[in-house]
Image (cartoon, rainbow, N blue to C red; front, side, top):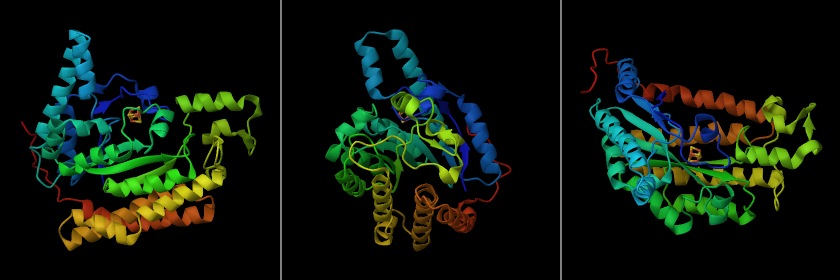
Amino acid sequence: MWASVQTVRGCPKHCSFCSVWRTDGQKPRQRHVSQVLEEIVDLRRRGFRFIALADDNFYPVPLADLAQARRRENPERLQSLEALRAERFELMDRLAQLPGDMVFFTQITMEAAEDPEYLDAMSRARIRGALVGIESVTPEGLKDVYKDFNLAGDALAERLQEFKKRGVHVLGSFIFGLPSDKPATFDATAALAQQANVTLAQFVMLTPFPGTLDFQKWEASVADDVEKIDGIPVTRHWLIPKHLRPKVYAPHPVMSADEIRTRTQGVWDEFYALPLVWQRAKCVKSIKSRLAFVMISKLYRQMYANTGISTDSARSNKAHRMTRLMARPLVKLFAGAPMPELQMPN
Ligand code: SF4
């Protein structure tokens, strides 16, 4: 349904669960705007009109970093940040010149909502949606994952609404199973997702990916006492056959793995209940678009909640088959007529 193009790699942050900054580095490296454009134009010629800008972080230069470079009177850093930012604007200005039926989606940090100039440029470029890593709705949870630059509570909901006001829909990403999470965190997260009016949401369970800070801490904590499944230590979980892999790895201070799993499933069910999805579908005008929105929401839930959380492999396989069936008609809906003559924007 979507093609994907990467425009920038690396993220200056250092969230504890995230593999991006460990593998791709903290210094953002941007591809030349013309190369990115050539790839996108080629895809549109072939009939792809929906493109995911599959960047680690589409907002590599937050205003806070610019202010800090000014405060520290560091002209070299300031110049390199400003150049990076200027290239982002150039990319967005040129995306805006592409055919009007094109739609882009990306991944971004919440700080972009403080930058109306940037959000307006995104809107002009028809970047209609962005995955925003919200992770936790509590200050304690954000501290757990070294993401204190995010907001919590009401301020968080207001910040997220800024995206929508400027025409950028948010796919909010939340993590459950953080050390400070409590049973009440699940309800609070479901309520916040509603209050912030995010268009889509995903609720994932904390997974220690190799190379991350969380992984290192977890591996050191289990040391020689590590549990084995099929003879494989859980600290090498990617080698365990998929149907045997646990869903939650690190022991939680107040909840069992099963409690985290069932409560996570409950939040997916609540967020994607049909009446709420239909209400959210009002973000598009025609009945046809609303029905498409409902199908996409249900497909999204099917792809992640039903296939990723279930511990029953038969149920999980059935969910995979259902996902394929649901996706088939949507492929046609997403395609555009090929434009073999399309030229590069200036
Ligand atoms: S979670 Fe997002 S903001 Fe944090 S390091 Fe990873 S890519 Fe960067």
